[in-house]
Image (cartoon, rainbow, N blue to C red; front, side, top):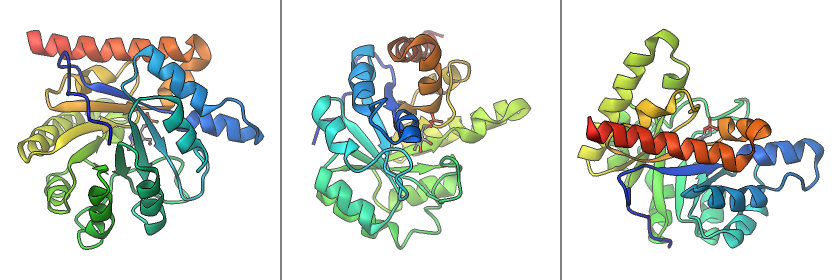
Length: 255
Ligand code: PXP
């Protein structure tokens, strides 16, 4: 298992680059270009701290063959997002990525629209999580910043929670209320001994307040970076995101 880099050599959250939508573009033509492996190598050069990829049950973007290629091409830790199914758990155990992030999955959704309902699945999830932990894989759960879900994450044995920032990103005038939920959720989760990550819908414009939260150890960002790469290139987009995250955390620490 790749050791998790310390939250921060410099107290700055790690940036996980989610390259699913490089594969979405490739798959639009059914060929090999653009190759997510090339994107992973560029992300490493641009300062990303990890690679995130979601192997969906319908394989709409990342495919089974992509994962070992990504793992072989870069030394960055791979965070494999997956649904809580036996099929996905056995793929993860075979691949042995650094971490797995369990996400809810519905075929009809365009993206991962909400967090897991850990409270509802409290009996089922340990059957998936236990073998992953036994295989030495770090286990994260993608949940909303809801106190009951955070408590349930501890009781099913997760080591990490990734707080879903989609409601914050889409909040409009309610942004302060959504940021408050993330602030409280991050504090609660860290207080219960969980490592805290966050992601979904983050952009250059909205990343700073989340990156400033002192408990956040990692941000996973994909769609915006791949879209921005069309205009400025992937290295430039990732480099700027890395800088904004670092500046937000450093400003919070020194204020
Ligand atoms: N984290 C998780 C668990 C996700 O499922 C996703 C993709 O929905 C992301 C982060 C990245 O979200 P986005 O592509 O909106 O940056």
